[in-house]
Amino acid sequence: MKKKMNYLILLLTIIFMVGCTDAEDASNADKETNPEEETTANTNEDSEKEEETTDDVNEDSEKEEATAAVIDEDEVEVAVEETPTETNDEQFSGYNIIEVDGGDLSGNRIANAAVDIGYGERDYWGFTNEHGQLIRVIADEIILQDDSNEPVLSSGRYYSDEAKVPGVESDVLDEGHVIADSLGGVSNAYNITPQESTLNRHGDQAYMEDSIRSAGGATNFEAIITYPDTETQIPSSYQYTYTIKGNEIIDTFDNVNPDETNESLGLTDNENESSDTNSDTNGDISSIDTNGNGQVTIQEAKDAGFSMPILSDHWLYKYMDDRDGDGMVGE
Image (cartoon, rainbow, N blue to C red; front, top):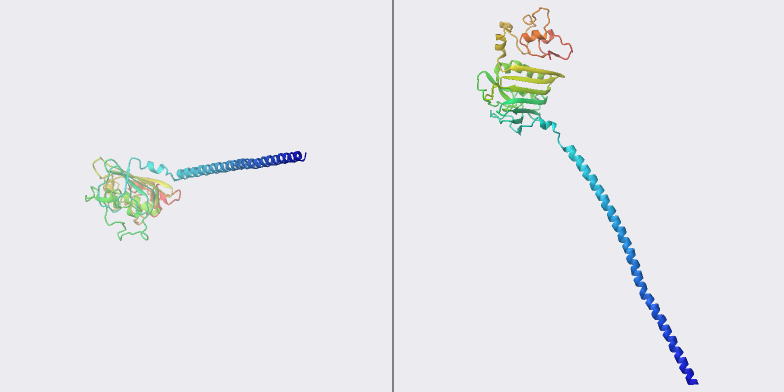
């Protein structure tokens, strides 16, 4: 009986031990399972972080694209602002813009060329046609020579000589500036034409230059030069248009001796020949004042050979009627 009890106790002990072992194994199994769940949880958390990071990157990319768009837009605006206007280019259409030294004595000109003929920083331009003839000279503003700040020679010129344009070898033709030295013009062939000497020194050309000097400059200056044919470099006539003191002046004259022309027209009278200079003739207007009323009309002055306008420093001015009081008569 005692032996049976011992077997029973042993059996119960074995059963108890087996039960504890199963419980411990189950507990260990649970512990081994938890790391996987923890890893899965961590993985999910990392995924969420990656998604947040991706969202941040996408947001930054969108910001960068927006910034780039703003920069591109600014660049476009700058490009538009820096694009030169076409207004200035229109006057050079069909011409080759070339550089020629202001003192170049060569009389040869290139056809269909545009050359800057203003001394220093002045912006004057001379244009040639397909025959190499100088046909047009322009300047938005005529700026007078400044002998106190510019290297002007004792002769009053920038250069000691002028371009030898064909025709200037004649005894009766000068190397005539279209825009004079005193008005800031250079001496190359794109500003020089063979011009009748009396016309250049004492006639309409000289008077036009003196008018601009007396006014302190001019604006909207244009010279149109005409030739009798396509072969010669000697002009047949000139037309000057310019504005002084707000008044537009148009001077048109032939490239001839004005004294001879006036004489042929019966406009001169021996010692009382009129001259387009500012010299005083002691107030003798008897040969000009045809009706003897002591006043000189514009027509009387023109008939006597004077060019318009008559400025306030001209000896004839005080005998004329300056109705608008701008210092000019006959503008």
